[in-house]
Image 1 (cartoon, helix red, strand yellow):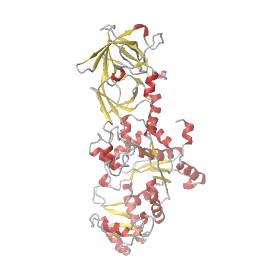
Image 2 (cartoon, helix red, strand yellow):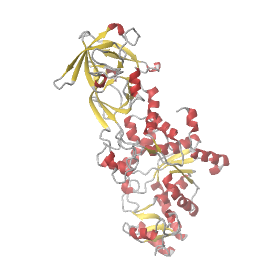
Image 3 (tube, helix red, strand yellow):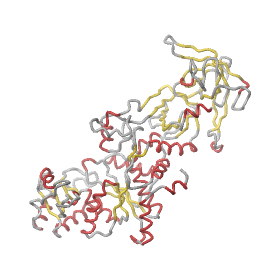
Image 4 (cartoon, helix red, strand yellow):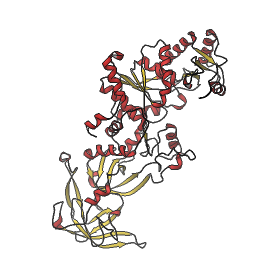
Length: 559
């Protein structure tokens, strides 16, 4: 997408920020935050939020904090914290100051809870969770007050201190704020702001056995940090009145505002962290960084670049309307980024032997070909041509269909950057499978120079004698249905694509790729874009297919 096109993409958050800056709201400051809960790896939806929060701060000369919402220690871990930090850094963003944690503010949040009790606005409720749900009412019926709502301030202070000291078991007491049990907004019906959780915390250890709710901790943490624009997804829209209630009823040092945008929904994908964790725990994928996963680490391992993800987030814009983005937009973003930046290479993924009968057994001729067809600055690479070559099995047909542009008996093709060859003989095994093609080459057709010789097409190749064995992993979409969660009668697991991963263990790549570094990216000519996988080592190269070429059949047909 061009800069002019990017400028026209809707981003209503930026419109709000620009209006605030014009009016001097927040003293002309812009401070955002990215507040992930460390209970899983970040996914493509989080990437949109990261780009929005950090990108907004960058655009308007502000700052963005990275703050972990660590109020649920039973589901959180240091592994997730480390992964999130790694992903944000990889995407190219830098947070202001040190990494922050909601747990940094636990004492202040506790003190403000005491303040609410003293103001007569909070009480310790000893209803069971089941009773509390029954008292809450529903969307058509109002709730009713807890029998503990009218406790005295002293009683509530003593009970809250007992909660902190571990005097209540889990589920037997909670601190709630007094708002309105008849409110049409269920979030305002005396919500819980502290609950008993006797769990070890990855940051505070065993210092606390009560933990604040997200609704309570979120806005106050924003206020402590001086956040000006607290940007959330649309599911928090109904929580905004509660966010504002706390800001207005507590002596907080700042007055942040919450704004909601539509989350990213991508077809053939799920972004529920619970379901992503299920995929990992039940070994439907190899881990959080499996290249089929929509996690940032999975996209990175598959070969996506930080810039391609940032460009994609710019392409889809920021609105308040829920919609589903087609996977092809994400694939287009990575193609556009890799096309100009990726060196070329030839890799034969499913090899079939091609023997040049009129080429000397001991001869080896080296061809120099460009690293990139349009960027001379990338230089050239050298490829050996020998008697024994390999081409793709799919580039040969015993009976060529109409308009076939590849090799067939008694037909000729050009070997990319080398010679034209003609198939003279086909050798098959006992099962009738083709195992070798005997061809002759025409020395007058050397290189890519035009001649009167008109071959049937162009195919890629490598030397069977002087190339590097490698494994190629061909990835497809993880699900067969565009919306794997739409069918309420079936599990999303029922729609896992059995062909989402195809292993090609006998691939061969040109010899100059022997030292290819992990995460380096290439366009395999006529095949697509590929990335060196982290499973690679000194003895084995592994490549992941990032994405196929745009309209690859047309490209082949026109060669």
